[in-house]
Length: 132
Image (cartoon, rainbow, N blue to C red; front, side, top):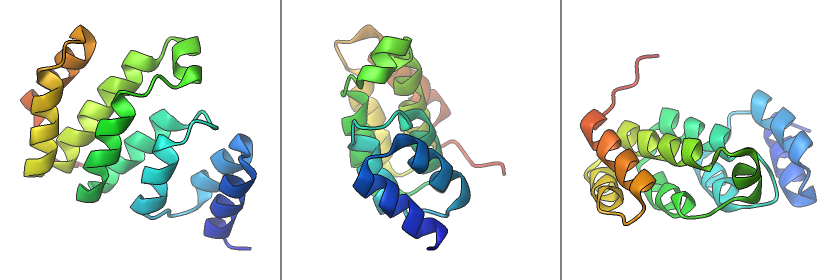
């Protein structure tokens, strides 16, 4: 079984720990990461949005924008929801496309003061170049 097969097997089994281990070893396509970002059965949302930002994949904008509005239970329970939302804004800034800028502008107009702040912060960094 390849590392990528392990990611898919963990996803099918909804096994968060197996997913964590598989993601640490595998190069995963953005399409799979986007799907995982919106799933609520695991606790890897912060890691996944960080990875999507590093990839700079333009097709991830919509998934990231949706994820910002999902109150994932583990993030709420651990008090990390706002940290996650800020990471989403930075991922959008890192993607650096016109669509990601529009997404950040939308966040900057949010009625939620935290999301509004993160949208403004993301816009101030847009486009955020990757310095690997």
